[in-house]
Length: 329
Image 1 (tube, rainbow, N blue to C red):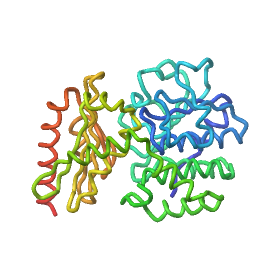
Image 2: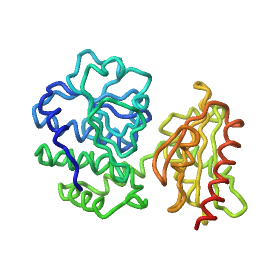
Image 3: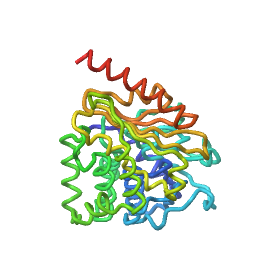
Protein backbone atom coordinates (compact mmCIF):
# COMPACT_ATOMS: atom_id res chain seq x y z
CA UNK A 1 0.00 0.00 0.00
CA UNK A 2 1.31 3.44 -0.97
CA UNK A 3 0.44 6.50 1.09
CA UNK A 4 2.09 9.88 1.40
CA UNK A 5 3.05 9.84 5.05
CA UNK A 6 5.50 12.75 4.74
CA UNK A 7 3.11 15.52 5.96
CA UNK A 8 2.03 13.38 8.93
CA UNK A 9 5.64 12.53 9.78
CA UNK A 10 6.54 16.23 9.66
CA UNK A 11 3.71 17.13 12.04
CA UNK A 12 4.78 14.48 14.53
CA UNK A 13 8.44 15.42 14.32
CA UNK A 14 7.60 19.08 14.97
CA UNK A 15 5.43 18.29 18.01
CA UNK A 16 6.26 17.36 21.58
CA UNK A 17 2.95 17.30 23.45
CA UNK A 18 0.41 15.19 21.55
CA UNK A 19 -3.23 14.35 22.29
CA UNK A 20 -4.80 11.27 20.68
CA UNK A 21 -8.58 10.82 20.68
CA UNK A 22 -11.07 8.34 19.26
CA UNK A 23 -14.82 8.13 18.94
CA UNK A 24 -17.58 7.78 21.52
CA UNK A 25 -18.67 4.25 22.45
CA UNK A 26 -15.09 3.11 21.81
CA UNK A 27 -14.53 -0.18 19.98
CA UNK A 28 -11.46 -2.30 19.39
CA UNK A 29 -10.24 -0.35 16.36
CA UNK A 30 -10.40 3.15 17.79
CA UNK A 31 -8.87 1.97 21.10
CA UNK A 32 -6.24 -0.33 19.63
CA UNK A 33 -5.20 2.26 17.06
CA UNK A 34 -4.99 5.06 19.63
CA UNK A 35 -3.04 3.02 22.18
CA UNK A 36 -0.72 1.43 19.63
CA UNK A 37 0.08 4.82 18.14
CA UNK A 38 0.61 6.33 21.60
CA UNK A 39 3.14 3.64 22.50
CA UNK A 40 5.03 4.26 19.28
CA UNK A 41 5.11 8.04 19.67
CA UNK A 42 6.44 7.68 23.20
CA UNK A 43 9.28 5.64 21.72
CA UNK A 44 10.09 8.80 19.73
CA UNK A 45 10.31 10.77 22.96
CA UNK A 46 6.92 12.45 22.65
CA UNK A 47 4.62 13.25 25.55
CA UNK A 48 1.33 11.57 24.61
CA UNK A 49 -2.11 11.73 26.22
CA UNK A 50 -4.91 9.41 25.08
CA UNK A 51 -8.38 10.81 25.74
CA UNK A 52 -11.84 9.31 25.30
CA UNK A 53 -15.15 10.78 26.40
CA UNK A 54 -16.81 7.44 27.16
CA UNK A 55 -15.76 4.61 29.45
CA UNK A 56 -13.60 1.84 28.05
CA UNK A 57 -15.49 -1.46 27.63
CA UNK A 58 -14.48 -4.04 30.21
CA UNK A 59 -13.30 -6.60 27.63
CA UNK A 60 -10.85 -4.07 26.12
CA UNK A 61 -9.27 -2.85 29.36
CA UNK A 62 -6.51 -5.45 29.05
CA UNK A 63 -4.88 -3.39 26.29
CA UNK A 64 -1.49 -1.87 27.19
CA UNK A 65 -2.01 1.74 28.24
CA UNK A 66 -5.79 1.48 28.67
CA UNK A 67 -5.42 2.27 32.37
CA UNK A 68 -3.82 5.63 31.47
CA UNK A 69 -6.67 6.89 29.26
CA UNK A 70 -8.28 10.04 30.63
CA UNK A 71 -11.57 11.90 30.12
CA UNK A 72 -11.76 15.34 28.42
CA UNK A 73 -12.53 17.10 31.72
CA UNK A 74 -9.20 15.84 33.09
CA UNK A 75 -7.12 17.62 30.46
CA UNK A 76 -5.04 20.37 32.01
CA UNK A 77 -2.54 21.31 29.32
CA UNK A 78 -2.36 22.56 25.74
CA UNK A 79 -1.18 20.13 23.03
CA UNK A 80 0.82 21.14 19.99
CA UNK A 81 -0.71 18.33 17.90
CA UNK A 82 -4.10 16.62 18.00
CA UNK A 83 -4.52 13.19 16.41
CA UNK A 84 -7.91 11.61 15.70
CA UNK A 85 -8.17 7.89 14.98
CA UNK A 86 -11.20 6.13 13.50
CA UNK A 87 -13.31 9.32 13.54
CA UNK A 88 -15.13 10.43 10.40
CA UNK A 89 -16.47 13.58 12.08
CA UNK A 90 -15.40 15.82 14.94
CA UNK A 91 -18.74 15.27 16.67
CA UNK A 92 -17.90 11.56 16.94
CA UNK A 93 -15.34 12.46 19.63
CA UNK A 94 -18.12 13.56 21.95
CA UNK A 95 -19.96 16.61 23.21
CA UNK A 96 -17.93 19.39 21.58
CA UNK A 97 -14.97 19.26 23.96
CA UNK A 98 -12.48 19.12 21.10
CA UNK A 99 -13.62 22.53 19.80
CA UNK A 100 -11.57 24.18 22.56
CA UNK A 101 -8.38 23.11 20.79
CA UNK A 102 -9.28 23.50 17.12
CA UNK A 103 -8.35 25.08 14.77
CA UNK A 104 -5.49 26.60 16.81
CA UNK A 105 -3.83 23.19 17.23
CA UNK A 106 -2.75 21.25 14.11
CA UNK A 107 -4.92 18.20 13.44
CA UNK A 108 -3.87 14.81 12.05
CA UNK A 109 -6.52 12.21 11.15
CA UNK A 110 -6.15 8.46 10.57
CA UNK A 111 -9.35 6.75 9.48
CA UNK A 112 -10.92 4.07 7.31
CA UNK A 113 -14.22 5.96 7.02
CA UNK A 114 -14.86 8.59 4.37
CA UNK A 115 -14.36 12.07 5.87
CA UNK A 116 -17.76 13.71 6.27
CA UNK A 117 -16.68 17.15 7.53
CA UNK A 118 -14.65 19.88 5.88
CA UNK A 119 -11.89 19.79 8.47
CA UNK A 120 -8.59 21.66 8.10
CA UNK A 121 -6.28 18.74 8.81
CA UNK A 122 -3.61 16.44 7.48
CA UNK A 123 -5.73 13.40 6.67
CA UNK A 124 -4.73 9.81 5.99
CA UNK A 125 -7.99 8.15 5.05
CA UNK A 126 -8.75 4.98 3.10
CA UNK A 127 -12.34 3.64 3.25
CA UNK A 128 -11.21 0.43 1.56
CA UNK A 129 -9.22 -0.70 4.59
CA UNK A 130 -10.60 -3.13 7.14
CA UNK A 131 -9.38 -1.08 10.11
CA UNK A 132 -7.69 2.20 10.95
CA UNK A 133 -4.96 0.13 12.59
CA UNK A 134 -3.72 -0.91 9.15
CA UNK A 135 -2.85 2.74 8.47
CA UNK A 136 -1.21 3.02 11.88
CA UNK A 137 0.89 -0.08 11.13
CA UNK A 138 2.24 1.48 7.92
CA UNK A 139 2.70 4.87 9.59
CA UNK A 140 4.92 3.31 12.26
CA UNK A 141 7.11 2.00 9.45
CA UNK A 142 7.24 5.52 7.97
CA UNK A 143 8.44 7.04 11.28
CA UNK A 144 10.81 4.08 11.75
CA UNK A 145 9.48 2.88 15.08
CA UNK A 146 10.07 -0.87 15.45
CA UNK A 147 7.04 -2.83 16.60
CA UNK A 148 7.16 -4.32 20.08
CA UNK A 149 4.78 -6.80 21.69
CA UNK A 150 2.55 -4.17 23.34
CA UNK A 151 2.10 -2.23 20.10
CA UNK A 152 1.36 -5.49 18.30
CA UNK A 153 -1.33 -6.48 20.81
CA UNK A 154 -3.05 -3.12 20.37
CA UNK A 155 -2.99 -3.17 16.56
CA UNK A 156 -3.96 -6.86 16.37
CA UNK A 157 -6.97 -6.15 18.62
CA UNK A 158 -8.02 -3.33 16.32
CA UNK A 159 -7.80 -5.41 13.15
CA UNK A 160 -9.24 -8.57 14.67
CA UNK A 161 -12.33 -6.84 16.04
CA UNK A 162 -13.10 -4.82 12.89
CA UNK A 163 -12.84 -7.94 10.73
CA UNK A 164 -14.94 -10.09 13.07
CA UNK A 165 -11.98 -12.34 13.75
CA UNK A 166 -11.00 -12.20 10.04
CA UNK A 167 -14.43 -13.49 8.97
CA UNK A 168 -15.80 -10.34 7.30
CA UNK A 169 -15.36 -9.56 3.61
CA UNK A 170 -13.24 -6.51 4.46
CA UNK A 171 -10.42 -8.96 5.27
CA UNK A 172 -7.90 -8.66 2.42
CA UNK A 173 -4.56 -10.31 1.68
CA UNK A 174 -2.64 -7.38 3.17
CA UNK A 175 -4.87 -7.55 6.29
CA UNK A 176 -3.72 -11.09 6.95
CA UNK A 177 -0.12 -10.20 6.13
CA UNK A 178 -0.17 -7.43 8.73
CA UNK A 179 -1.81 -9.76 11.26
CA UNK A 180 0.94 -12.32 10.64
CA UNK A 181 3.63 -9.69 11.30
CA UNK A 182 1.88 -8.71 14.53
CA UNK A 183 1.57 -12.33 15.66
CA UNK A 184 5.28 -12.80 15.04
CA UNK A 185 5.94 -10.38 17.91
CA UNK A 186 4.74 -13.02 20.37
CA UNK A 187 1.02 -12.40 20.74
CA UNK A 188 -0.81 -15.00 22.82
CA UNK A 189 -3.71 -16.02 20.57
CA UNK A 190 -5.64 -17.73 23.35
CA UNK A 191 -5.51 -14.57 25.46
CA UNK A 192 -6.73 -12.55 22.48
CA UNK A 193 -9.60 -14.92 21.71
CA UNK A 194 -10.79 -14.98 25.31
CA UNK A 195 -10.47 -11.23 25.86
CA UNK A 196 -12.06 -10.17 22.58
CA UNK A 197 -14.76 -12.77 22.05
CA UNK A 198 -15.29 -14.81 25.21
CA UNK A 199 -15.25 -12.30 28.07
CA UNK A 200 -18.71 -10.77 27.98
CA UNK A 201 -20.61 -9.58 31.03
CA UNK A 202 -23.64 -11.37 32.44
CA UNK A 203 -25.64 -8.33 31.38
CA UNK A 204 -24.57 -8.80 27.77
CA UNK A 205 -25.41 -12.51 27.77
CA UNK A 206 -28.89 -11.86 29.22
CA UNK A 207 -29.66 -9.01 26.82
CA UNK A 208 -28.40 -11.00 23.85
CA UNK A 209 -30.64 -13.90 24.86
CA UNK A 210 -33.58 -11.54 25.22
CA UNK A 211 -32.98 -10.03 21.79
CA UNK A 212 -32.57 -13.40 20.11
CA UNK A 213 -35.75 -14.70 21.72
CA UNK A 214 -37.62 -11.73 20.24
CA UNK A 215 -35.89 -11.78 16.85
CA UNK A 216 -38.12 -10.72 13.97
CA UNK A 217 -37.75 -11.33 10.24
CA UNK A 218 -39.37 -11.11 6.86
CA UNK A 219 -40.96 -14.28 5.52
CA UNK A 220 -37.93 -15.05 3.34
CA UNK A 221 -35.44 -14.45 6.23
CA UNK A 222 -33.58 -11.82 4.19
CA UNK A 223 -34.23 -8.96 6.63
CA UNK A 224 -33.77 -9.73 10.33
CA UNK A 225 -34.04 -7.31 13.24
CA UNK A 226 -34.33 -6.94 17.00
CA UNK A 227 -34.32 -4.07 19.45
CA UNK A 228 -34.20 -2.94 23.04
CA UNK A 229 -36.45 -0.22 24.41
CA UNK A 230 -35.36 2.09 27.20
CA UNK A 231 -37.64 0.45 29.77
CA UNK A 232 -36.15 -2.99 29.17
CA UNK A 233 -32.60 -1.66 29.40
CA UNK A 234 -33.39 0.10 32.67
CA UNK A 235 -34.99 -3.06 34.06
CA UNK A 236 -31.79 -5.01 33.34
CA UNK A 237 -29.43 -2.17 34.42
CA UNK A 238 -27.85 -2.36 30.96
CA UNK A 239 -24.47 -0.73 30.42
CA UNK A 240 -23.40 0.49 26.95
CA UNK A 241 -20.89 -2.36 26.70
CA UNK A 242 -23.64 -4.90 27.39
CA UNK A 243 -25.22 -3.98 24.06
CA UNK A 244 -22.04 -4.20 22.00
CA UNK A 245 -22.10 -7.04 19.50
CA UNK A 246 -25.84 -7.66 19.40
CA UNK A 247 -26.11 -6.33 15.84
CA UNK A 248 -23.75 -9.04 14.61
CA UNK A 249 -26.01 -11.71 16.12
CA UNK A 250 -28.79 -10.76 13.70
CA UNK A 251 -26.68 -12.19 10.85
CA UNK A 252 -26.69 -15.74 12.18
CA UNK A 253 -30.05 -16.78 10.74
CA UNK A 254 -29.83 -18.85 7.57
CA UNK A 255 -30.60 -16.81 4.46
CA UNK A 256 -30.26 -13.37 6.07
CA UNK A 257 -28.96 -10.55 3.87
CA UNK A 258 -29.47 -7.51 6.13
CA UNK A 259 -29.53 -7.46 9.94
CA UNK A 260 -30.53 -4.54 12.16
CA UNK A 261 -30.39 -3.77 15.86
CA UNK A 262 -32.39 -0.88 17.35
CA UNK A 263 -31.15 0.65 20.61
CA UNK A 264 -33.57 3.17 22.12
CA UNK A 265 -31.80 5.89 24.12
CA UNK A 266 -34.63 7.73 25.83
CA UNK A 267 -32.35 10.07 27.79
CA UNK A 268 -31.13 11.48 24.46
CA UNK A 269 -34.44 11.16 22.65
CA UNK A 270 -32.91 9.02 19.90
CA UNK A 271 -32.64 5.48 18.58
CA UNK A 272 -29.24 4.16 17.54
CA UNK A 273 -29.54 1.74 14.62
CA UNK A 274 -26.73 -0.71 13.84
CA UNK A 275 -26.82 -2.45 10.46
CA UNK A 276 -24.99 -5.41 8.98
CA UNK A 277 -25.12 -6.68 5.40
CA UNK A 278 -23.94 -9.57 3.29
CA UNK A 279 -21.71 -9.04 0.28
CA UNK A 280 -23.77 -7.23 -2.36
CA UNK A 281 -26.05 -5.49 0.15
CA UNK A 282 -24.80 -1.98 0.86
CA UNK A 283 -26.02 -1.04 4.34
CA UNK A 284 -23.70 1.98 4.30
CA UNK A 285 -26.00 3.49 1.65
CA UNK A 286 -29.01 2.69 3.83
CA UNK A 287 -27.51 4.34 6.92
CA UNK A 288 -26.63 7.44 4.88
CA UNK A 289 -30.34 7.94 4.14
CA UNK A 290 -30.80 8.64 7.84
CA UNK A 291 -27.71 10.82 8.28
CA UNK A 292 -25.44 7.98 9.35
CA UNK A 293 -22.55 6.22 7.71
CA UNK A 294 -20.00 3.48 7.98
CA UNK A 295 -19.04 0.75 5.59
CA UNK A 296 -20.60 -1.37 2.88
CA UNK A 297 -21.23 -4.32 5.23
CA UNK A 298 -21.40 -2.57 8.62
CA UNK A 299 -22.88 0.83 9.33
CA UNK A 300 -25.16 2.75 11.63
CA UNK A 301 -27.14 5.89 12.27
CA UNK A 302 -28.77 7.77 15.13
CA UNK A 303 -32.35 8.95 14.55
CA UNK A 304 -34.45 11.26 16.74
CA UNK A 305 -37.58 9.63 18.13
CA UNK A 306 -38.77 6.57 19.99
CA UNK A 307 -38.29 2.94 19.05
CA UNK A 308 -41.95 2.73 17.96
CA UNK A 309 -41.47 5.73 15.66
CA UNK A 310 -38.07 4.96 14.20
CA UNK A 311 -38.21 1.21 13.63
CA UNK A 312 -40.98 1.23 10.94
CA UNK A 313 -39.17 3.96 8.97
CA UNK A 314 -35.88 2.10 8.89
CA UNK A 315 -37.45 -1.28 8.17
CA UNK A 316 -39.35 0.20 5.21
CA UNK A 317 -36.10 1.60 3.84
CA UNK A 318 -34.39 -1.73 4.44
CA UNK A 319 -37.07 -3.61 2.52
CA UNK A 320 -36.77 -1.13 -0.34
CA UNK A 321 -32.99 -1.61 -0.42
CA UNK A 322 -33.46 -5.37 -0.47
CA UNK A 323 -35.80 -5.09 -3.43
CA UNK A 324 -33.34 -2.84 -5.28
CA UNK A 325 -30.43 -5.17 -4.60
CA UNK A 326 -32.40 -8.25 -5.61
CA UNK A 327 -33.40 -6.56 -8.87
CA UNK A 328 -29.78 -5.71 -9.69
CA UNK A 329 -28.36 -9.17 -9.01
